[in-house]
Image (cartoon, rainbow, N blue to C red; front, top):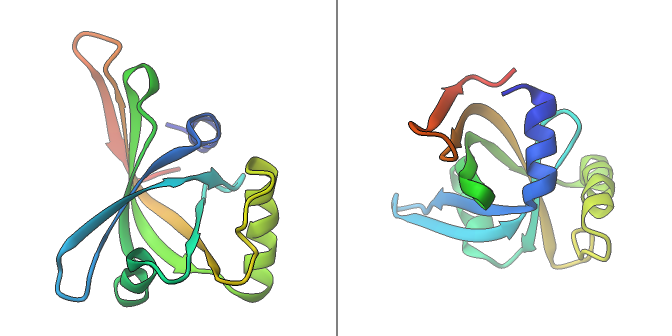
Length: 137
C-alpha cells in the first residue's frame, strides 16, 4: 500500500480502534475518529483524562485497526505521541479540516499522532482474501 493509498483509505474510513497497554501490561482498546496527514501520520483526539492518554504516556507503542467497510481494513503499528505547542496546532489544523467542529484543540482534549512503522492491508472482497503487510513507504 502506498502512502497515497493509505492516506486516501484513512480519510474515507474516518474511524478505527486504537489499542494501548496500561502500566501493568493489560490491553485496552477504544473506537476513535481518525484523521491523517499527507505524510501518513494518523491523528485522533480524546479527552485528556482517559486511559488511552495515560497509557500512551507510559508506553508509546500502539496498534490501530482502521475501517472495515466492504471487508477492507488496515492494521497499523506505530509510535504514539501526545502533541503540544506548534505541533499540536499544525496537526490540529489538519484534524479540523477532516473533522470540522471537532474539539481537538480545546482545553481538556489531547491530540495524538501515530507514526506508522508497520501496515497490514486486508481485503476480504476476494477469494482468497488479499493480504499485504510490511514496513510502510
